[in-house]
Length: 317
Image (cartoon, rainbow, N blue to C red; front, side, top):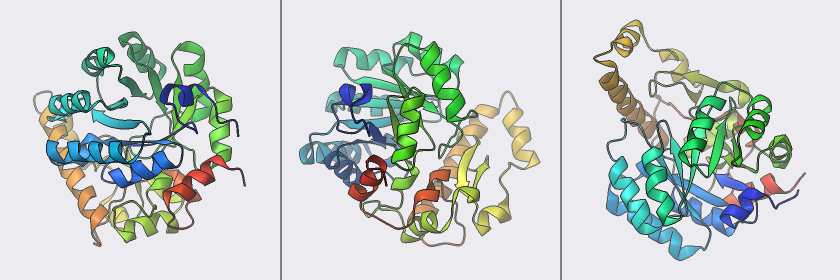
């Protein structure tokens, strides 16, 4: 594959791949191995309970590799830690920030003077144009094959549309599980890809062996969209427990979510409750399994070290 793209130039990496920030899954070990393998890794700031732990993780990665360090920030009101997380990113000098689920204006304005790149998750042209006007350095085009909070459009629709209408680089998110997929999104107009689900079943991930094995045992047909996890549609593996509880909010939850006075608080409580359920499932063996993943687990046939996963994304079969 052609390894040189705008993304490799922007971040000074060998291959145009960001190991996507995955809630609960991403950690410093994974970021270090990603850097040593020629790509870059990003981690959600919310994966760390305290600012001290967050700072220690950034320092650990910085001491172990020269690869760029990325951090994902949730920029809406469901994240009360945003201001402190952003302050830490600025002080520690991370290389780029990926914003999700909200208005990135404050993050972009704070990062510009520091030379920190800001890439913004978008799912449509309207929001892409908005973040471009705010000064984003690149757009992460989240398509319908993404894990977690997926978008409504296919990569074949979304990437060419954004590449045609926007002037900043487009990074594809969703549906990349091997080198052929990576080449395909680049041919569509992306400068690289944010890849997540295939890294869940990695040796370096700290999630339970059951979660990793589920990514091996289940496939694309087993991924369903659920609104019960965070209140926002999110992709999960259709385990027996997910089948039992269903994937849609019940009538009372939907009623509260539509109440103008209560919906902000209901959404926040739903998010917190859902995240705790995901955390319990991710790190322990329980029949109440709610595992977040995308359809590219179809490509996961074994639990492998990150360097082998990167090789499968960069070396054609």
